[in-house]
Image (cartoon, rainbow, N blue to C red):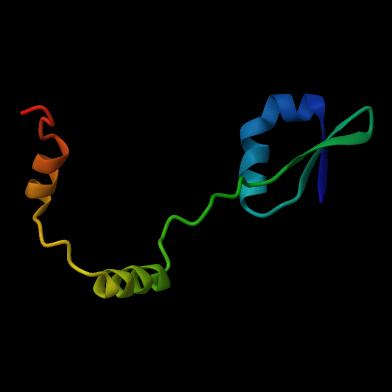
Length: 83
């Protein structure tokens, strides 16, 4: 763990961010007391788990067919009820 003053952080923030990204625990202190901790932001995983695709495929295969094409469904949706 490394502790830096607010003045040090102000003058070297990019360097402190790089240290935090490299896994170092970076603490910024004001008047000798820790007030802020820098750490990498966590991001949610972007990849869809393979189990999700398997579930979707199984669900699609078990659903009964509609019997209409997507174009026919759209035509019915936008069909003028008064015509």
